[in-house]
Image 1 (cartoon, rainbow, N blue to C red):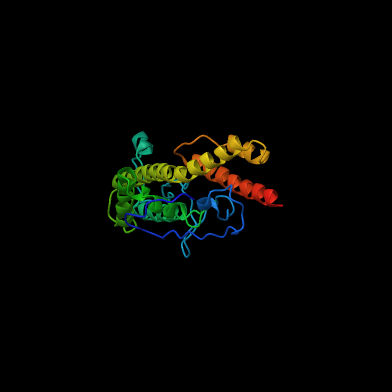
Image 2 (image 1 turned 90 degrees about the vertical axis):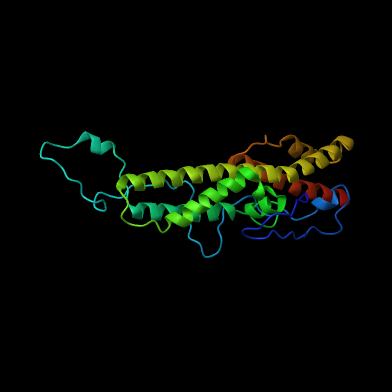
Length: 249
């Protein structure tokens, strides 16, 4: 992958680049791109942490778990049905879920490089971009507070805290994948330009490589865009190596 900036604080794991490309690969592939291409993007999590998904939605506790409410003999109060119900335990559980989801996402491995998505952000300096850094700080502060959310808060206060947690997580996740796309596109752009130049200058070199180059997906800022770019990059590197091996025979 293209070299990235290494400045800024490292909050989790350091990225390590290990070159395993055979040294006798012919020279059409730029030297800095000669590396192994592991399997495509797959979700993972840090060792010892519980599995969770970002899609988990906050749930109000069951009726048995909620404090009983005074009911009049005149029938149900329609206003009570529209009042959000939550407990301090709900807040603590949700904070724990989101903490695990955050770790699972940041620990996701990336096709074509050694390390996680968060390593990619750190190595490229994107983890210190204002938008991402602020979103991360806001979510982290809430999680630290809410995993120990005290009993005694009203149902309305608990519901508001759950809502604040979900908003902070949504904002962080959007900022994270935007930063991940920005960081990886530097690598993908360099590979694309090098392969395009090769296939343009040597049109008969490898038709399969030309096909992969022409099918680069559109860049974006979502997780889907990131996965499409990394998957394409992995195919490009694998095809390039196949073409090199064929040319060497």
